[in-house]
Length: 92
Image 1 (cartoon, rainbow, N blue to C red):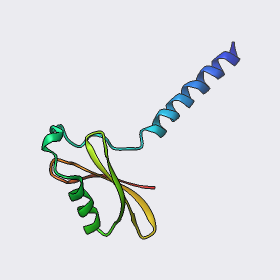
Image 2 (tube, rainbow, N blue to C red):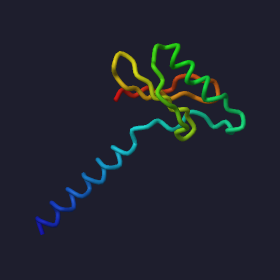
Image 3 (cartoon, helix red, strand yellow):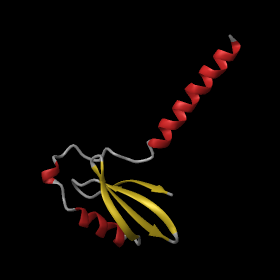
Image 4 (cartoon, rainbow, N blue to C red):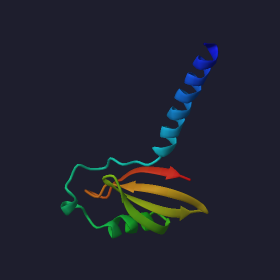
């Protein structure tokens, strides 16, 4: 009985850590319809103006996710396509 309880706790912890690892991105920037979004190139230009060497960008949820390098370190920058405000930054 004790063994089953230990296994159940281990599985619960493992599932919790696994889902946290998958959720490293920031996905909620706007509720505005995609047809009204500003161009992704403008988000890249904002990152360049902040001193990042832009590698690529993509849409992540309702955000523009821009990958850039600054001082040798990789960053993910999340911009709102509505007003191009910087919503979140993750250092890798």
